[in-house]
Image 1: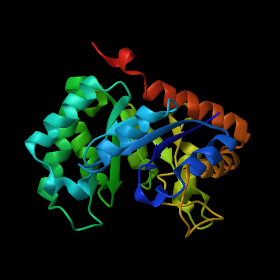
Image 2 (image 1 turned 120 degrees about the horizontal axis):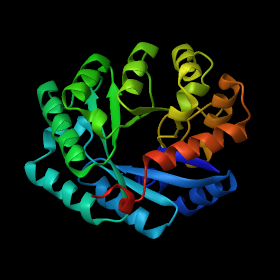
Image 3 (image 1 turned 90 degrees about the vertical axis):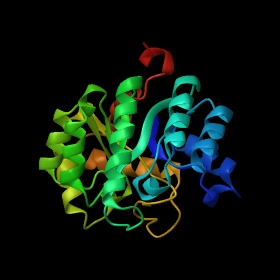
Length: 261
């Protein structure tokens, strides 16, 4: 069984054929999907999706691109949902994004720290978005003691040195479509070194579509292509990669009753 550990199937890009997308995912061997809501619009749609399908779980939080719009009331809302909604398995995606100039860095830092503190309060893992901000992301994770809850570095794009620091903080490393690209030297090298018991795979659909569909809309069924690429890099069979990454996802994204005090 495959697990897509990070996707956005509530996205409007799927409004016309969501049922077909889910059917193709099932046909490809996907047995579990973790859908991520990251602002006022996508948290409710993510939860509705998780409520409708028993094989979909929810992650909720606030994306760094939208950090400037987050209010204290929004943080309270996320806490309430995380405490009460049975399908919420982690907080995120949170972090830093220095590529898109949509939220000032100091605001991103504050919102990131607030969400880590909430995750520690709730004893829930965190899903980290990191774009062009490796040093600051690692520093904040350390300063806020994110290792107390652990989590996953979503669609990892950094160096092995940064990955090692994250592994040392109780984090999983997740890879998506870019690891299938012919010229993706660094992601392939990092994946080769990540211990099997800390490896996850994802699509981030509808974004980051793997080869040979690059440039088209991504979908959860394509996580099979990521598994095949990871298997080749690790010298294992796709079935072995599917099994271990699903076991890792189960260990990280545990049912609510297992993570509550």
